[in-house]
Length: 255
Image: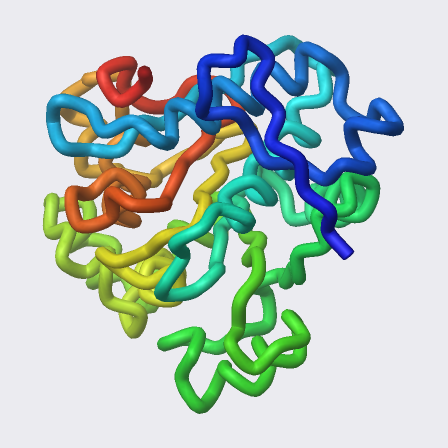
């Protein structure tokens, strides 16, 4: 049973929802709780561009960023008003880090189903070729939970022609589950109506997310890739949130 408590360090509202067990047993430090609260508040903000605010967690090595990321996903999952689904994406640099996510999910009593995307076939994750497998991985018929994938997996496309179209700036293929893995994850989250959390762990190590931006030398090559998930879109104002461990997006997207 996930007995929740809303934690607000300043009393100003917009705190983070965590398991009461976590507070009573000190499983998050005061610094980690502060980071969770700040991320939760930022995810509630709508910026002047009509995009939802994101949060960069830039704490040093060994500070426990992974636990904050997991707690943030749990916070978003417990928010009221998730009408479409309770699906979240956790993207990291190495598939082996799935073990760390599972450990934090267990230790913090978040209790979310977690599945590795490896093994799923090309196409829609909720299509007939993948849905039974995904239901088995997540343990529920609705396919709700957290999908874990690595950055190399995320940028895979079905053939070289698709990769060339992306390099040329054709972003329409990014939302096509039949053409690239990015599109399959985008569709599973709910597309433009996605409501869950999107976490980018070790995001400074992401490569080739938006290769067509490299020639522009903006320093924000990672920015437009995740924006296609629409965690920040105007249609997606009510609930969604994104959190990046180590900065890899434009500072204009932060709040």
